[in-house]
Length: 249
Length: 249
DNA sequence: GAGTGGTCTAGACCACACA
DNA sequence: GTGTGGTCTAGACCACTCT
View 1 (cartoon, protein in one colour):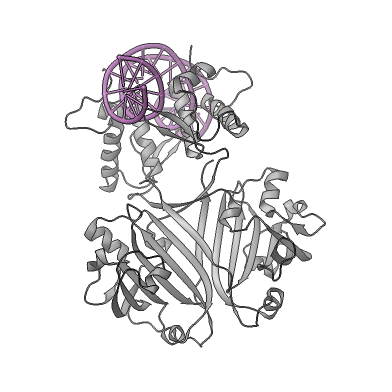
View 2 (view 1 turned 90 degrees about the horizontal axis):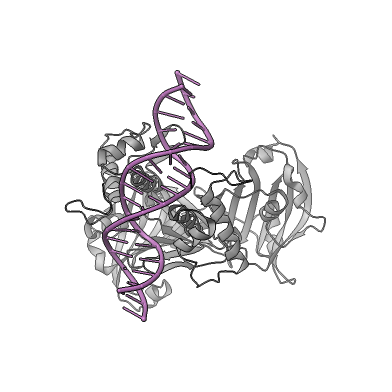
C-alpha cells in the first residue's frame, strides 16, 4: 500500500479514524471494561493500517484514560468513558502553593508527637511526627504575618528542620535535597473558619474574623505521607487561585 | 543499519538517550529558550537514529513542557527546566466542582446585564450576560441550601436557561449539549468572607458567620468566557478537596 | 516456546509556513 | 518553491508474560 490518506470522506488521519471507532466501540460495550482489546496486529489487519498507525491510535486512547497497555499482555480496557482531566501547570510546587518566593516560616514552638495520638489520628498521620507551630511572614520583618501555620513533619525526615527555626524554602523541598524524596502528589482541603483567639492574635486580626484554612498533605514516592501543613489565612488579604487546564481528551 | 539497541553501556532505548542529551543541552543553554531545535532530520543524523526515533524523543520533551512543535516551522524551545505539572483527574468537571450529583440550582431572579457595566467589569466578563441569583440545594427540599449562587452566563448561550428556573445539571454542560461548546479550562478563586446579611438569610446562618466564596470561570474552545459562578458556602458544612497528582516528568 | 507490546529502520507522501 | 513537521508503510528484532 502506498502512503498518505486516500480514504473516502476522510480528512482526518488514519490513526484518528481508528481511535474514533475504538472509542465508540468501547463506549458501546463491545469491549468491556477489564477485558483486552484485540492485539495491535489484529487491529492493523482489521483497519488495513500498519502497526505503527494502530499504536498511534492506541496512544490516544491511553491518554484519554480508556485503556492501559501492559507489556507482554495487551491493551486493557480501563473505562467506558473518557475521563475529564484537568492539569495545574506551574513552575514549581511552591508556586502552586502560592508561596511568594519571598516568604519565610518562623517556628515558635516544636514538639515531638507519637503516632497514634489523637492529634495525629485526626489528621490521618500514621507515623511519628514533629509538630512546628509558627507563622509565615514576608521577608524583612513586615507588619502582620501572612498566615498562621502548623506543620507536621514525618519523623523519618525531621532533620530537615534546622536549629534556627526559620525556613525560607518549604520543607518538602529540603526533603528532596537531603533525602532524594520527590513529591508524587498533594492533597488540599480548603475551608472557611472563624479565627480562634490564638489565630487572631498571631495574625493581628479581630477575634471571630473569618479565615481561610488550608490543609495540605504531601506524599512521596510510595504514597508515604511526608508532611502535613495547616495554614490559616486572614480573609482580608488572601485568596487562593488555581487554573485548571483541560487535558486533550 | 539493523535494528535493536546495540549501543555500548546503554540499557535504555535510543529515544531516551536522545531525549536525555537534549534535555541536558537545553538546561545548559546550548539551545536558548525561544529558539529552534535542529530539525528532526539533523538530529537523526547527529545521533545516528531514524527520524521516528527522534520524534519519539521530542515527544518526551514536549510532554515535559520543554519544547513545542509548530507544523512547518520546527521545534521551539519553551523552557530551560521541566515544569512541575500536577493533574486533577476526575470523572467529570461536575465531580471536580463537588456538585454532588443530587443537587439542584434554583434561581430566584434573573436579569440581563450589559457588557461594560461595573458589575461585569469587576468580574472581567467582556460580554453581555444573564445573571441568575439563587441557591443550590440538595434534591427533595432538604433543609438549608448548600450554597448561595450568583451565575453569569454569556448572553450568546443564554438559551441554556430554561423557564423553570431550576437546573439539575451545570449550565456549562447544557452548553456542551446545545452548542457543542466544550470546556477548555476552569479558573478558581477561593477566599473566606464574612457572610453578608442576604447570604446569611438565604443559608440559614447567623449574620457575620464565616463563609467560603468560590468564583469559577469556565472557558470554552477559543478561551471564550462562557460562564462565571460565585458560590458562597457556609463554613460549617463545606470544605473543598482537591488531589493533585504529579505528572511524569 | 509462543505471543504480546516496545523499539527501530528506511523510505515515502502530505500539509503547513514562509519567502 | 523550499523546507519543516505530520503521517504512513513493511519489515525487523527485543523484552516481557504466560504456559
